Image 1: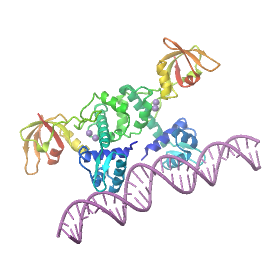
Image 2: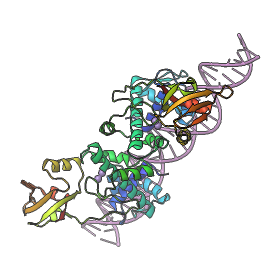
Image 3: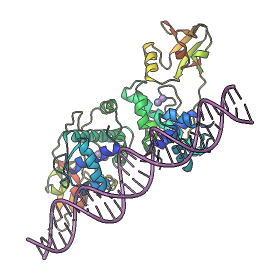
Image 4: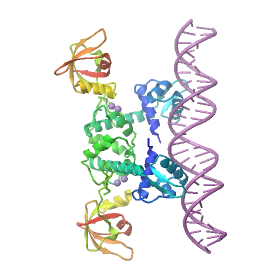
Length: 218
Length: 218
DNA sequence: AAATATTTTTAGACTAATCTAAAAATATAT
DNA sequence: ATATATTTTTAGATTAGTCTAAAAATATTT
Ligand SMILES: [Mn+2]
Ligand SMILES: [Mn+2]
Ligand SMILES: [Mn+2]
Ligand SMILES: [Mn+2]
């Protein structure tokens, strides 16, 4: 049996190791989980005993294949629920994450398989993040961050890095959504702000915005 | 903050007191919760401190208005999720309870309000149990148990008392569902079995079945 | 290569929820 | 009304997850 807390640590380690590759250190987990390093040490010992993680004292931690499987499955559930909330229950993309944090821990294979089918097997969540299939395979998308886009080119918005409510509401109020077409007009060297053209307007966005919006060339 | 465990105890007390009226004793809760009397004592002290229950040592426990409100809200969520699972995710009525036991603890008013609307404000769950509205009002239905139905009369099946998978599957295999019309043909005094007529067949059901199937005269 | 700073682990304590075993209160039977 | 049985509570432990403070290991400076 795996506890809800263990699941959350595994998920945090997965994200921190950028998909289970490099080792993750204790303080990074503590900060991600909003807990103390000593608590993390205890937990990674437990995860190690249960074979979800490999751990040598003072050397950081990595997920085992079992651990990765758990992480990907939780991410799958999280993102499917986010799609459900947006598509069926009129949630906006800045409201879904918190509820999905809870729904992702419901344990029922039938539930998630049927939900997947009910949503017609979505491949991306409301923030443009890929939804792994039952076997844990992600559909990889070519995307670049607005900060690195080239002046004069036209792109489609395909995702966000920051999924905070503040950032998503900012995008809403500037009429930027997934699928929106933008053209890069100017990069200001002084503060790295970027002028972009939308369908009917031109706006200037700050560097922070430019670093958190993903685009695909069209 | 109310914990998941506290919610489950409150729900158990609510059911055992037939909707929050009479006092409930420790052993009854222990048996309903599959735990020990000593654990129950600890918990009802805590519920009492938090003002969800009234409790005097050795005198059993009742829910306060706050406690009842919590109980009814969980029941509302449980039953709405059950409807969702059956109506939208192809669950059968014997599969929903277990998953709903977990979903009922997800805390989001928007979630449950939108789910309610998405399901078009259902008033009964897949087992014929009424779904309280946002204010906690139940729609009461006139129903009698098959064991007390009169020979010669025709009824509609409107609910079940036992919601165990075994019983529900038994009903499935005998083509009895909510809405099915039956006529009581004969009551056998020897073993209290009852012969009933369905649309195209006649079957004899045992006393246990007759005690767990609810009917409405038509 | 020491000295210093940072990170990580250990030790010991706390809370929520549980358990067993014993004590206390209440209910039932003679 | 007293003895017996049942129910309920208390006392003391246990487990998961957390914390603080101190110790140990590792990393960084000088
Ligand atoms: Mn999310
Ligand atoms: Mn997301
Ligand atoms: Mn149920
Ligand atoms: Mn039900």
